Picture 1 (cartoon, helix red, strand yellow):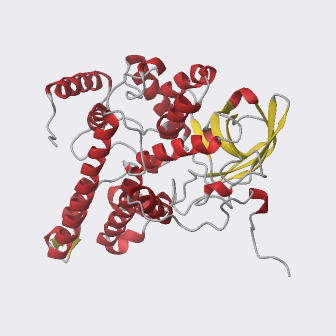
Picture 2 (tube, rainbow, N blue to C red):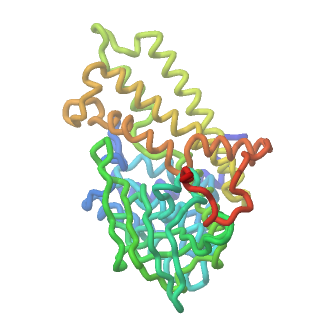
Picture 3 (tube, rainbow, N blue to C red):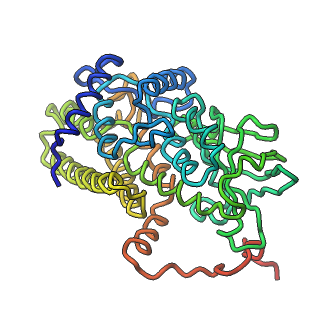
Length: 415
């Protein structure tokens, strides 16, 4: 694999850089653009993100890998990498549209109707309408097929009742894509239907969850007799699991690619600036060894990602291999944050942006990364996927296989 730009890629990079130089402020040395850790639900940040997204869309630089018919450039995955590399050098607001543009938009492209593509994709691309993913439930996260939120058909409408949880950004989203149980008499993966739901609909109650880092990126969402038109059904009735798999594959690919925040360069700088007994921590051989191990693992992850990007640029869709990036990347970020907090000694326990290194972002990252290991499939689920679908090992034994969902035991029986 040749990591140097081809002449075509170099021309694309120059074009991207020229537009960014004319439309954004370049970061100064040692400066870092704000990430999602600074407050996903901050209204001023959301507004700035939407303005930047619209500006890119009007110039043809939004969702560049989307097909041209949906407003993208039909760019290759490698060109997307180049664009992201160039954009990272500028002081721009964080991307709060990843769930819609990276997961739900591609699902609509594959499984949605012509009317749905026409109505929803362009506002999604511009950032005019932000989307959330309504999958996880209190009893159905790691085993998503166990979801119990129901949708019952009444004429041309469906009536939804139930609860979702860990819904990122629900408090400011205009639309959501939801999985509902529509046939409890079928096997658990065969009685599910996929819908688009207006998050302003009567009967929706959104309750932000206060997280351990003090932020509220996740929400509980309750549905009480919420009505959705059959026009907003994505795919066939009771075949929503196919759409869910498309969403999940794109989700793991997105998460595996990173989630923003401090990076290895920030950690290296922290080690150089932190003093241990009058000497930089970086002078300690054990610190350098630890940094070297992080660097090696990050490079392995980066090049594995390039291999996936290359496959995508040749027409492949995100497959089970995307699980590898998330399974390795999320724990690695957690370890790096833990090491950064340790480097700061007693100051590492302070959640004070003014008193802590890097404005306290390492502390925020340390507290947030356990959630990253759950989002989009836990480590255990990902190991099962890799074992069964990549390595071809025997599947996990399922006692509920072939059983109607309504007959699946959910707790201890009374005797």
